[in-house]
Image 1: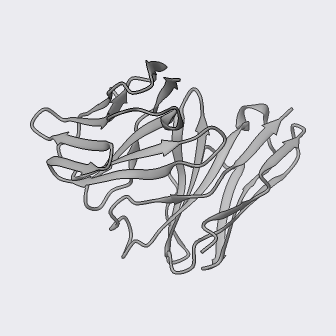
Image 2 (image 1 turned 45 degrees about the vertical axis):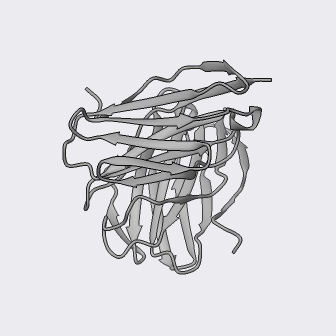
Length: 110
Length: 118
């Protein structure tokens, strides 16, 4: 079993829809949770960062962490074609390497 | 700041040839990571340097792969001899970490070097 599981998609939704992206993990020591966005032929870029449990909102993006269920989510409201990319979840404990999910490919249809 | 700079952006070579990938980290970032990305395996950590010292090279596939960081401004990843299964996108990433693994996970990636070995 992988430490971090992420559905690879692809996920295709119409413009304006709410998108939900998710990851599950097995290591209860993970404390830092991240979402990276990767456009085609580019490097990943940090989109959202959360420490421990709870929610974090940044514009149209909301990251949620449920440590009791070992489950993290990224919500995108009012999705735009420019949100079309691969989204990778990532996580780590205080003194460990970062573990990335395999990425979910998202396409927003105009 | 120009960000993490990688070269070459694209490399096509024949099996058996030596390949050298280069990375210039963001100034002041003392953690440097080399990742490999493929469709099958996703992002894999190959090696991690902190303050120019290799901390973890457990992800380096085999002896054909080697990495160096001679100073805070430059790192190389070398494959010799290259094989078709090495075809992938290789990313360099840096982080302002305070010590080995003691960073929050905020990585700054370069645009990658796309390697094709024929």
